[in-house]
Image 1 (cartoon, rainbow, N blue to C red):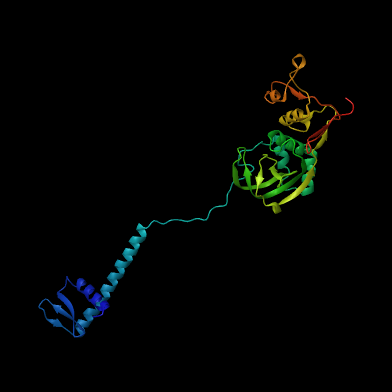
Image 2: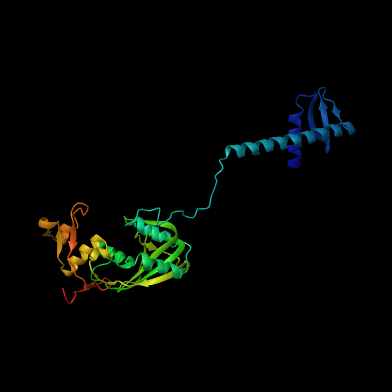
Length: 299
């Protein structure tokens, strides 16, 4: 007997246990019903009953199968898979800065947004002319650029793009920055230039350079003018570093308390309470690119 026919007969038998029909058998290739009296019933009536039975069985099996699939789906946990999101970290404003720009410097940087390239350069030249010397002086004092390393060029760039940024602890963060000023510093002997975000002094890496536009090249030379000191051009730590490199006199205190101090001691002094100054004169010339000092001819 065909296995499929046998399966259908077995299913029909199970469905008719509660009726007067006792069994269904295959005799001489014909399906017959055996009633409670054991009398075989053949013919059209038997065929109609068999057809109904088989239809009900098929429907029952379909319901059971659907129920089983539904139960299986309910028991099976659904795992939602999402594509990795693009990092949303602003590597200039969202990570710890190496050195944050002052409030006035922040205002100058904010004023560059949406301005044409030439106008950005003009704003910086007029409102922050010591940007490059201040930045390089700080990086030398910090040791990011050694005092005996020569700097060939400092060029400013502006724009928005993806990048990796290093925070104050050197940890690298992947993300982006929007409408920011960067300084590209070419150091002699180094394979790649340094790229520094001016707003936070954090180092930038893997920057899409095509998204940035040049603003201008900056000089690292300056000459002390009437009534000026080193801090007119560089930060206090940078001024102490310059004094240490060139053997300039450093004094601390006021009036009768004024006394000479070492660079090591000077950097530890709270300048909010005690005046510290490096002795320079009008006409003294400094070049932070080559880290050279030319004293004024007349003092």
